[in-house]
Amino acid sequence: MSETRKNDLEIRGAWFGVIGSGLATVVGLIMGIFNLSLLTSFPGTVSEYSAYFVDEVGAYWVADALIVVLPIIYWITFIIGIIGLIVSLFRTNIGIRFSGLILTGTAIGAIACLSSCLASLSSQQSQIVSLLSSDPQELATYGISVPQLLFWPAIALCCLWLVGSIFMFLAAPMNEAKFRTRRMKTLARADTAERTGKPLEAIKLYSLAGDISMKLKEEDKASEYFAKSREIREVAIQAVLEAEEKRKREELSARRSKLEEKRREILMQADKSEESEDWARAAVVYKEAASLSVDLGEKKLAAQFTAKSKELQKRAKKTSRREEVSEEPPPEE
Image (cartoon, rainbow, N blue to C red; front, side, top):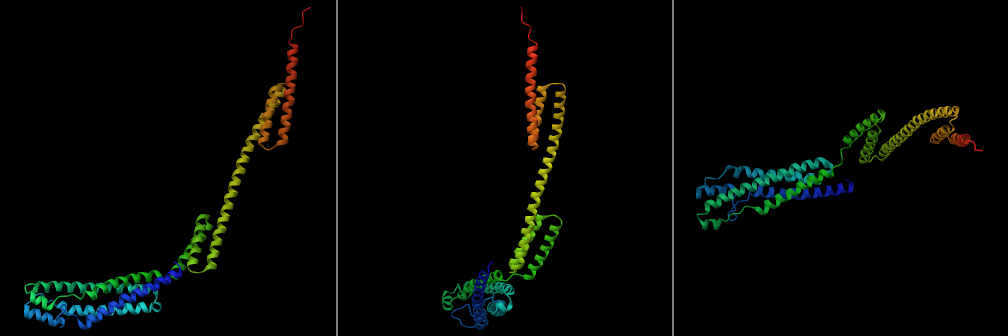
């Protein structure tokens, strides 16, 4: 990820954190100071309207948690909001990665606190409505309302706050120590692969070390490792070419030995045919020897065998004509 993109994510995450934690701080402060009543027409404290329902209506449901726990949660929400606000504003001093971690925890904590307050107040509202449902005039007089205008927007912006913490994680600089350790191990493996005759693995590992160096913004070392990877690749390619050339030479040498052996056998047959004055057979055999000499790349010797074959063919024809003349019967007188 580019530095420009990281800076953009960091700024967005900080703004999301400021907005979400700011509203959570305001809501926690308002609810903590005023401890707003569920009854819009009854401006007293929670304990006052709880006592009212116990004394006047005989409500059995008044929970101590509504009186004791909810104010504590309000102030916890306020403190969490202050922490998130401070971290969002002073993220560079605290550290981007650590700021993202704190913002994640505080955002989740704020959402949990606000959601629990809203759920508790909504439950109490339902019970109050149930108690006053038999007296419409009383219900109309006191009017029931959960402060949703405060809680729902605060919860929504706390979710935005949580998204901001994720952006902060993405914008965090990489752990240089971790990457340096990884590069050191990669180079050790690359050196081992090079020494043990594993060029493909060494090429890949040196290239990986170059990529890590680029992430660390150490371009000189990256160039060095990339050059080493190219050098090993060139040496490996040269070794493959030499091995292929050697194989071809060996194949040609083996083939040449076979051709020379075959030619020697053919020439021995040609000598025997000449000794027995089988000129036609000797001509054919020399022609085969000439063909083998061409395959062996010995053109001069091939020309000599060809000339020998032609000479023997002529001799064979002369011999054949003499034999035909000698076999003709004498003319009658």
